[in-house]
Length: 139
Image (cartoon, helix red, strand yellow):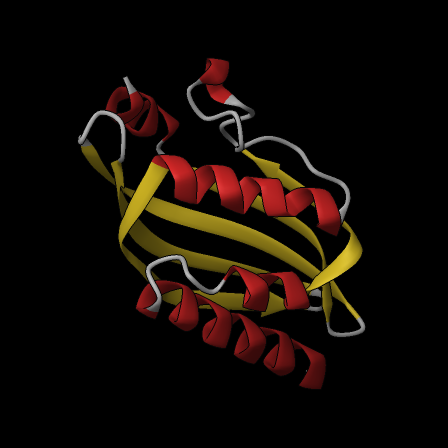
């Protein structure tokens, strides 16, 4: 139970910083991740329109996700609304909105993030969001 509470607390802080900084807290996310994190996205690279939203298996490579996201998109908001923890897993349910820097189009979406922790570090992440809305805003 203590680990569940610690994992949720770490994620609450990270998501709050993410929202407040409008994406400027990448270093904080990087500190939360294990070196061998398994990171995936429902978008799966999305036909070139979301090339950064793909699979990564090393923390050092994962910085590319953040660089691509923040290069192509401007955060409007990110709200983490609910956390559910069981054992080493945490699910965050929230909402987010972004503006594409090239097209000027915006999209808002519900957001679900799945996390798995070991020894206080995130070893697994998978994100779920409205990929069709993101693709429409990117084109």
